Length: 251
Length: 327
Image (cartoon, rainbow over all chains, first blue to last red; front, side, top):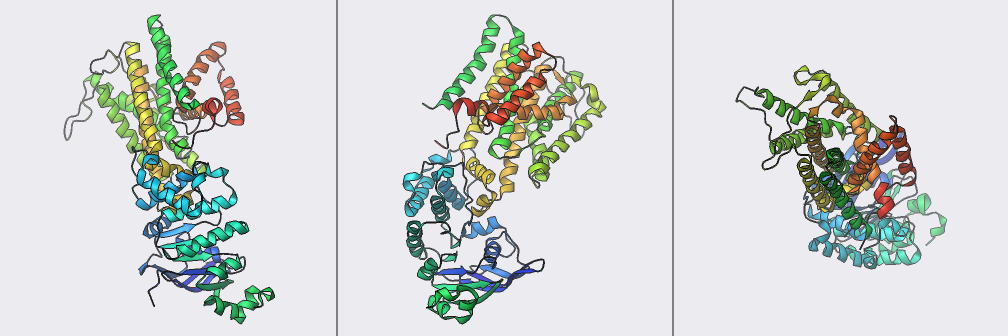
């Protein structure tokens, strides 16, 4: 088996008496989509923040490509190649769609402290940005101000910005939340092909999408991972069915 | 053609035409007013780098204005009294040369901005406003209680400092010098706003989480913007001191910080030429309303209230519409 890109070992996080993460182990291997599911309040967002760098775990380690990144900042982890999309879009709303995509390409290239060359005339950055926008299907909206985009288009742009970073792993926090059926299908096709570029840790509520896409699924309930396995294993798992999927998912 | 470049051109031509006309009709006071407007505009353009591009509401920019002013005052004071600035380890004399004074003013205010920014930028929001204000007040009271350089009374510089090839005592020539510097500063800020740094700084202003996810540390972006901003405002301070041939602690006062912010808000926050329009309007109001009543600030306050309530984008927002996203 190949070494995992992302390896979370024994991560614990408590807020007062609330155990948001209890001894969590999780790996993301090259070429896979690893979905993290769980009911509201299970601690999914807390976990992704600990992986991306917004929160420090109380105990445990986060290994990225074999290196311990537990004490690194969000920015440092991003520079190492963690490409994150946000649950609540945090795009630069005053900027155009193209500017947001250029931002990603600029972040990936890293030479931000340049003060005199017009960035929107940089052919390399523009080319990378346009490729990403075309991939997510936003190329015809590049001149639009981001605040004018629909909710679904903003989600697509979030993904496009992550693409321009050419990360080593994608951390996607509910990329399909609030998308219509058509938008979800489109994004699913995109993510399906994306796993070849870099593995994806996918937090998602949309069960159809998760079961269609994921290579492996981990189920988080009350801060604990109660099961990890392939789609079929998770469907068959009795604990998961009682704790999370309920009766409606009778397979 | 878009309205904004036209407005920029009209503004800059007017700002040049009024003092030229005053020169021809022999009205030196009007030239002085125009020079004041140009110098205030430079200070505002400086603040706008922090406030407009970086979203950093600094209520302490009088500090940099004052540092620039005192850089000029101290250097020129030593030159006019023939007392060396320091004797050891080497003798450094004062100077009456404007380029040297400008350089010292810019470097000194940049260093001040680096130190103060490094501390203040650990806070945000109201705390940032208060801490920048507090630093400026510290400098204000320090200047008041520093007898070597005039203390509360300030100090007079009897002859305006010199610039190679120009007679700076001639109002129109000094105006030309300040106007040239304004153009230079506008060009620099215009390029910065469109540079990779400017784009990322704006992203950090809109969403810190976004900047971090792009591998950037917002603090570094903010601090860099704050230093550039302070340095430009410092240059304006040196020019202001030279215009009046007088330096006093008032330059450090919180009213000065407030006025610089008023230039930016009146003109249009984040618009490169906004503070120029704001400073020009301020001078016009000060002059016309000031003639009507001693308490002209009441009317200024009413106008400012109107701008904040009904024309968020200031003069530029009103006349040129929303800023174009990119070109």
